[in-house]
Amino acid sequence: MKKVNVIGAGLAGVEACYFLLKKGYEVHLYEKRPKVMTPAHETGLFGELVCSNSLKSNRLDNACGLLKEEMRHMDSLTMKVASLTSVPSGNALSVDRTEFATKITAILKDFPNLVIHEEDVSIPKNEPTIIATGPLTSDALSKWLADKIGQQSLFFFDASAPIVKKDSINMSVAYKKARYDQGDDSYINCPFSIEQYDKFYEELINAEVAKVHEFDKAYFEGCMPIEVMAKRGKDTLRYGPMKPKGLQVEGREKFHAVIQLRQDNAYGDLYNIVGFQTNLTYPEQKRVFRMIPGLENAEFVRYGLMHRNTYICSPLALNENMSLKNEKNIFVAGQLTGVEGYVESAAMGILAAIYLDAFLTSKNLPNLPIETMFGSLHNYIIHGDPKSFSPMNANYGILYGANKHNHEECANKSLKLIDEWMKYAN
Image (cartoon, rainbow, N blue to C red; front, side, top):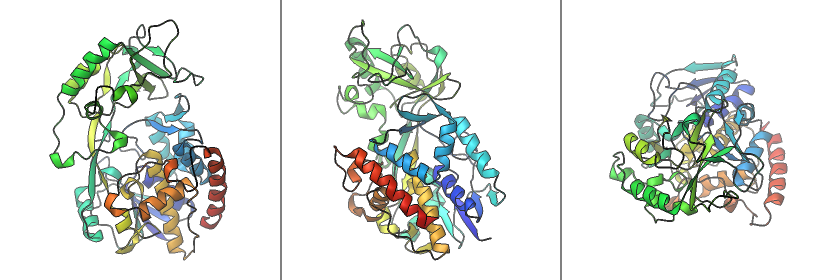
C-alpha cells in the first residue's frame, strides 16, 4: 500500500483524503487542531466551516452552483455531507456547521487506511504530499513555502459574520421572506427606514475596529468587512448586503434598506447576519448591531472576527499538475492555490488528489477542459498573470465560451466534459 501525506484537514484536505483513501492509499493526515488551535477555529473536527455556513447557490446558472454539480459528478465528500446536513436557505446550499464537520470527520475516520497525526508540520517530508493548510497556514510552513518558490507568500485578511440566537430577534419588527419570493421563508429580514439607516450608518463607520498591522489590510473583495465597505459611500451597503430589492412587503411602508439573517444550524435556533463580516471590536459589534431594527435585544453566540488568509502566486509556483516547480512530489490544494471560497477550496482538494494519483501511477491525464468550472479555476491559478494574481471565486467570466445568455448551455456541456475527464482520472 503506497503512503501519501495530506497536511491540513480543512475542506481541501478532507476532499484530498477521501479521493486517495478510496484509491487504496495509506493516507497520513496531519492536523494540528485541537492541540494547537487557530484564531478562527473552535473545534478539532475535520472540515470545520469558520466563516459562513453557506456553500452558495445551487442553481446551475450560478457559477458556484455549477462547480458544486461538477463536484457531485466527481463523488465529492463535501457535497455528500452537505446534502445530509443542509438547512433551509432558499436557492442556496447551507448546512448545520457542527453536523457537517462531525459527519465528515466520522466518514474519514472510518477508513482503516487513514493514519491521523495531531501535530503541526512546518517542513513537509520528502514524500508524496498535499499541502492543504488553507488560509491559516502557519508562519513556519509559510516561510518554507516562500523559500521553495523563491518569493514571499501573499497575505490578505478574511472576515466572518456574527451569529445571534433566533429567540432574541424581535419578530414584531423583523419578518420572514426569501428575496424575490423564491418559494420559502428561510431568511429573517430586518428593515430600515431612512432615519434608521442614517443613524446606523454613522455609528458603523465611526465604530472602533480591532487593531491590525497596516501592511495586512489587503482585504479580498468577496469578504470585505462591512465597516470598510460602508466607508466607500453612504449608499454602498444599500446596493450590496443591505439592498431592499425583492424584500418589500405588501401593506408596509417601502423599506430603505434590509439586512438578512440566514439559518445557521439544523435546529433553527441560530442565525448569522448575511454579508456582515466585520473587524469591529466585540463591544462595538454588540452596540452597533443592536441598532439593527429587530436586533435591539439580540443575543450574540459568536461575534464576527478577522483572520489572516495566506495564498501563493500559483502561476509562478506550480506546475500544470499543481505540484511545486521546485518540489515535484509536493502538491498544493485549496485556498492556498489562490482560489477563494469553501466550494472552490474543496474542488482544488479533489483536483490535487487526482493529480497526485496520476503522478504516482504514471497516468497520462488529458488537459482539464477549460469549458468546465474546474478547468476554468485551474487555468486561472496555473496560467494567470503573476503581476495581478489575487484570489478568485468561481464565476462565468472565467469560463471559456460563456456569455450572459448561455449559462444553461455551458453548464450542460461542462458536466458532460467532467464525466468524460473523470473516466481518465478513475
